[in-house]
Image 1: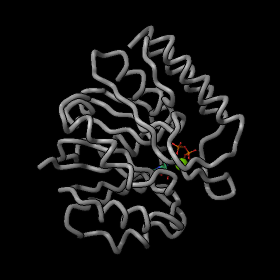
Image 2 (image 1 turned 90 degrees about the horizontal axis):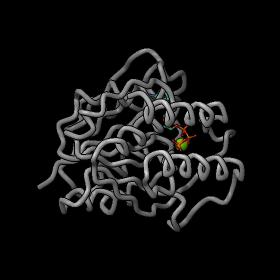
Image 3 (image 1 turned 90 degrees about the vertical axis):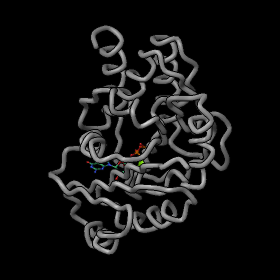
Image 4 (image 1 turned 30 degrees about the vertical axis):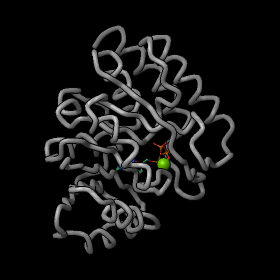
Length: 228
Ligand SMILES: Nc1nc2c(ncn2[C@@H]2O[C@H](COP(=O)(O)OP(=O)(O)OP(=O)(O)O)[C@@H](O)[C@H]2O)c(=O)[nH]1
Ligand SMILES: [Mg+2]
């Protein structure tokens, strides 16, 4: 049976982290859950106390350095065959994970992206300029790397763990998403995508990514293409 590792980056997610972890824990796989809380200032650490010491759960605490640093801190601890990045904000539904990892389990894919922009249901209908930005960044990815991804910025990415380990990730902040996409596409890996649901939240509800991260994504996509 495949063992699945979940990386859960969590920064000030007290409202949703417990539900996310319960839904992940309820999935019917052999699994490991690595939660990285770097300096949350809300009730997140208190919620996580209940999860410390549970079977297959690892908690990492460190100084706040961003989503990328959180993901990178988790990588050396992974012991599953497949790794899924699971945001802590309930935008991405763990019920989509079995479908997400299936192409890896059957031996067809090395990496699978869950796409919010290819007909998954339901989708929150909001944030027009984010949609424009995500479509543009995906188009740029496809031009630079000769791929056909519809949502390179998606938070739901699944990997063969040995492949994830070799990506040599360096970004600390949200630059990790274009860095992962670029490095995966640059190498001769089998990348698949499939539609997922997306229960998007607003900035008032705690969303943290901004237009600055969008500009940085352009820079990272081009840099990896030309230099790395
Ligand atoms: N540990 C840690 N997690 C973070 C940090 N910044 C963001 N995250 C987590 O990364 C995930 C994505 O952050 P969001 O604010 O939801 O970003 P978003 O704008 O919704 O973008 P996506 O969900 O990635 O499309 C959430 O689980 C956050 O808690 C950070 O500095 N440290
Ligand atoms: Mg989010």
